[in-house]
Length: 246
Image (cartoon, rainbow, N blue to C red; front, side):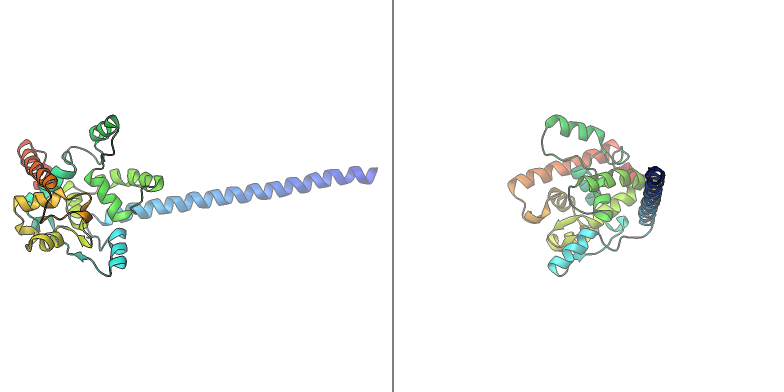
């Protein structure tokens, strides 16, 4: 009996030792996971900050399409080399309150929820984050990262830079990215020479350009282009274009 009793404390001590080692391993793993998450967050922020000054060489989606199609048309143009009518048209079509929000258009989000429709409320800033830094799926992970990076980008970049990057990475047709490639593809002119009508036509095919032709708009898209032209004139008159035209 004495031997049996003496073995029990030894067994308990052995189990406690094993549990302690497991707990130590879990704590070690948790510390390193937190460190890796912190390092990843820092690298993402540095990436966002770098694109404030460095033109993106491409985007995950552009590279994906280039691999699928063999090549894509894309030529970077600074905002100064893009017709002001194009900048106003894009904002009027996609995010009329671009100059007024900090990355999220709360009113547009509320309206979309109240309407209960599939109408999107994604701002130009959100689209830049998604296109320049993330992937195209609608997963919650991507949406969470987009929600974190959008205000960070707004803090690092001026509005002119956000719009400049948007106009250079937006898709305007299959394998056609950026307004320079789009202007040449549809109208045979440079982005600097786009007319108000041409700019409105390009903006009207967003955000689903693959099945649309800016040079041959359907009646519905012609009506949308007319609305875009009116909207562009409105934001120019009421000051909502000031943040990217100054």
